[in-house]
Image 1 (cartoon, helix red, strand yellow):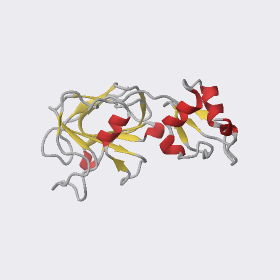
Image 2: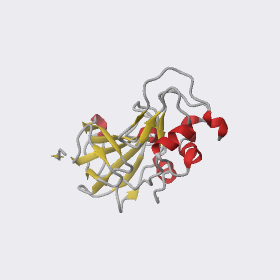
Image 3: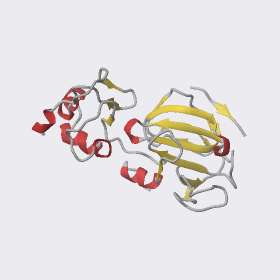
Image 4: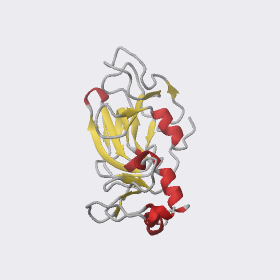
Length: 213
């Protein structure tokens, strides 16, 4: 760890496509490969509740037809509940809010907290970047497999490094006022892909993943 301080039966139908060997990822996801079925994956990986639970966890990825798995899709294997990235913060600028400090709608949810407040991983995953993020200041991005990416911005301290696995609720840094800010706060953002423009409402995401907010 690096610390840096700053100021169904039908479901037996296999996938028909070329692919590499299936793999259970370290972040609690499974990558679909040729020949995979929901029932087979659920049995092999010991998913509680079987293929129906696996389908419920991944409806957004699979779509309306559980037979239509796509090679390369990442499926969630557990329904672990998320936690808030900070405790005791006041929600300020919300998703899609207008403001003078961004060109379009606000891409995340802000939590007003004092500098140095503990910041936690909202869900288990893998750190894909940790460092300077221009207007986001010091920022951490965590990948959660099929659950997307969470961003933690304007930090004063980073306690993790790229490639590190983190658990739900693990300390990853401390809040601050770096980058484009008007005062101390945590900017929490959720994206469906690494690309800018894929942000979704983080409050909805937290609620969908069982967090109380």
